[in-house]
Image 1 (cartoon, rainbow, N blue to C red):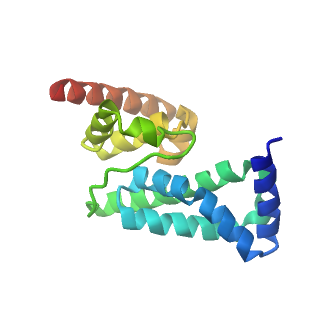
Image 2 (cartoon, rainbow, N blue to C red):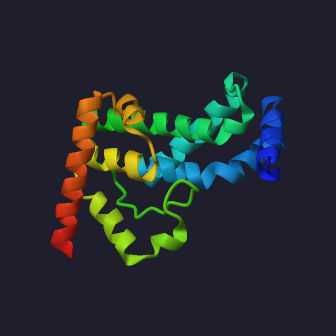
Image 3 (cartoon, one colour):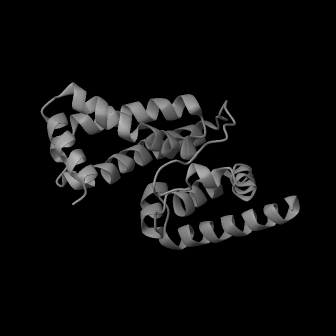
Length: 183
């Protein structure tokens, strides 16, 4: 077991007993990655910040339901994704357009790290992804950037497995076509 995992486990135990210093330390360790997760879905920096903070509050109040403290990061990310999707679905129903057109950074371990983000090809792909239909952009973000499999995306987007595979396939094709047009 690495010392980082051990530290997180100890911090989570302290957090569950209401230790505010431990909560601040956990927040400081995870806030950038959770913000980046939220902004990839909601595409509004203010909403992403709100969702991230609400997700931390939810996590801290429901820590007793976490069965394995080693999985805290993944559990927290799932809360952020669920809250982001809920906001996305609510906004889509209201046909709202996000105010910010933010070029976001992906800094968490499971995504594209910042050093690769400076690569022109990555910037181009991220930029073109923002021009896709919202459901295509969301599907690709969840699949390619967040690393969710089809079954998880089905649950998150509330679509059937066949629709999910079709959506991802069409989104990839649309992305390819748009990238070829800009090349």
